[in-house]
Image (tube, rainbow, N blue to C red):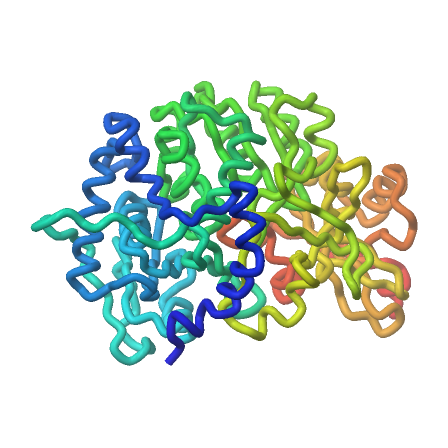
Length: 520
């Protein structure tokens, strides 16, 4: 069985290599970090969490965390013990994660959307002995490691105060799991210091203050959820609104009723909230938003800006959260043109040993390694993390072109799928689109595009080609297959289109083909 030492060994070595310089610079700390306890001492009556079923002040949250931590200690959880936390966007999940942090456990954070089989697989791979699954009736009972136990959700009465955390904030202790849409989820190891540094950069770039209220619609188990709900909110002593079930009408009502001012998440969900608000004739309280991803719908961005919402583009991942961003004070046309500048103390370069356009990142916010050795094989180059994304870097500003694996290679020429998507999304009547490769005996691959059009829109392969040519795309980047969808494109929990599923689900759908394919 994997032990906590085995699980974190490579991350501990990497942390040791970076520790002296990052501690000297003040980015990492040898002191423990408990952001909830600190917020409760500074602002006990301030609202910490808002959910449809509950609302807690920071003093109340701190007390619940203490009670839950007491239960963990009673069950045998000790410093350095891996604890699997399967979470959703609810109060009990936030309490459970902070409790595990407070007893110096190693937190293995998994979204409920991973499913019972996925959770059991992570438990086996990590050798976790204990699990927390608040408000999740589907927690698996089979396929778990020997001796594994799901712990009760209720907290303990405090016979005596729970000891203060003793672990240095820069010790590896927090594991996020990637979405795993194309392979087994990767375990991404952070320390509280790396996540806190990412959160500080997020606050500064976004211009967040103690007057803000955060609306969390991304999963708490994602890096977006971790940074926003577990770090930024208590660091600013502000409330986070937890939305755990997407429903356009109910979600919009929750947003409006709570007066949330900040949103960070998928552009598509923001657009649906704007639709709902317009239909009800109500005003959205949001003042600013972060939208990430290589392909943002410019129509949504402009719509939000026209509604008085400042839109910022940001780039990051579970491994390197909030690495680049446009700044809140920049002009609209600057913020929308690219993915911004590297944030404080973040370094970005373009080019790795095997990929001349690959974006590489390092800094005190960067993760410390993966739980599985196989995932690290090509992840690092010296101290640089290889993101797997193609990028341009000019005048200190970054533009992410797309995933290297999302580049279609036709006759040896590379076509970034996201670049084509962005151009097609500007065509009137195109509601949604996504490009993907199709094996081709003549060219190696050809470019196909799945498209969702507005009712009554007549879209042809020729009109798409004409529009892309007018936008300046060369001929080799033009799609040769247009597949018409009458339903939303498949997306993952973070709202990103799952390109790998498009080809599998294209069968039987109406399409138009280039002449060479139609005659073949």
